[in-house]
Amino acid sequence: MLRLPNRAILRLTGPDTLALLERTVTHTVADWREGEARYGALLTPQGKVIADYIAHRTADGVLIDVHEDAAEDLLKRLTMFRLRADVEIVRDEELASVSDETGEDDPRSARLFWRGVVPIAEVTREVDPAIWQAKRLAAGVSEWGEDYRAGEVFPTDINMDRMDGIDYKKGCFVGQEVASRMKRRGKIRKRTIRILGSTLIKGALVIGGAEVGTITSADAQGTRGLALVRLDRLRRAIGLSLPFTSSGGPVSFEFEPWTEDEMAALAEEGADE
Image 1 (cartoon, rainbow, N blue to C red):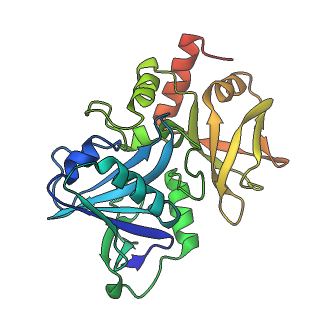
Image 2: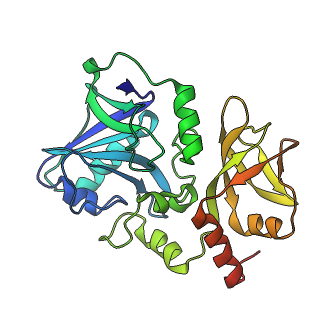
């Protein structure tokens, strides 16, 4: 097991732990077995992501694996929402987020490494950042602190709904009204898509006749990355057979099957702007 850098662990214990998460965060807590990991987030009332995380069910509560820069804010907000609930929420400095490069059990994607939480004393090495970056970019998984930060994106912008990070059928959670309205309308305009090229630079625009989106992260070689794009503009450019470029070089996209389905749905609804 190798330690993942820039991660922190929050420990939630007490009889009301699951009830607290049920009414605040995006993922389901029903039928959550001990040892099972789930992906989710806490949203603003306006429906944007404050922090996403991987949560592990334990015998006495839940461990939340979150980016270290988001940990304190997440802890404070969950504590605020606790009210009179019997839940203790602390940052556990003796635990570490770990990965096993031989496994594939990240709840966001089968193409990512196994994730777990263990005592820091049991871990002697860290994950090679370049290997982790290459793996997550190939899987099309955005990361807090790299592709976005608090309050910048909606869950669908980073494909959380496609990674079982949102349970639209559960009870009320913070930001649910906005998230559910976007789901009901069936017109998701922005998505994160894998992008290939030779001159990819984080923050650079992607052009397809007009601005299509922005590169949110790229590998050190500038050959693979992620881009947050407008699906209607992307579909229009594809329909007109326009070339895609970024930073003066040609780029191409790697689509998931559902990406093309959503672009087709926008076309049927006449959602182009």
